[in-house]
Length: 293
Image: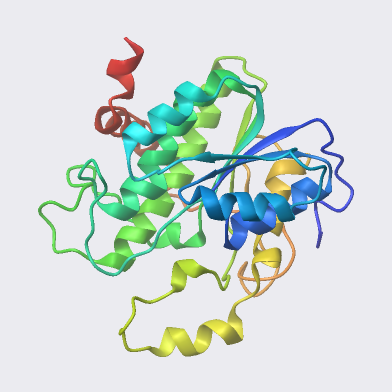
């Protein structure tokens, strides 16, 4: 299956995509808009968002740009409070990668805070308005994740940027599987799925100015693929006839490039004890449980 969106008719559907101004998010937005969807671009840079929206297929004024900073939980809450419309599909796409320790507005480790906690809060606050699917962009980097539930915030451990990124992707996948289990238990028609884009040349790999290039910088253009190819597993998760809890990824090169199909999650991601514990920790860190009281 090389283009899962090629025959999908998304006319009349509203698809909300975080981080839709570049990379996989932008390619996903263009693909679903070409199939008739109305896209809500949830982005930090709304000026850039408006330029991207103007280039998407569809009649003028079809697509909507709204401000969202996943590294600021107050921004996430404002966004959710201002969302009064029905959302057919939520695509949790935005993500950051960092080699040095940074912290979000709320003091969380930047990668875990942005990639997981921001999307966790966004999803739980919007869930009553979602009618079809929640698709979260994870990565096979999750296989290298080792979530330390006693130190999710990297307060006591020596910081390792690559490990923190893998942890955030493991959190994305474990969250998806726990969310889907809860939806099934509630008898909800909404499905939660996750997608692994493969190795994609996107701004997430950009190095800070002045940083010396390494071996990865040389290999990436050779083994990596473009965002349009990287978006295919995301599109499959949005449009495919798949059960909840499915993890999609590329077909070739050990699921690193080309096409899209269902792939396996790690045993760690499928650990229901970890899933439940992560959910409880995420509620505590975002204040979701208290907010729901």
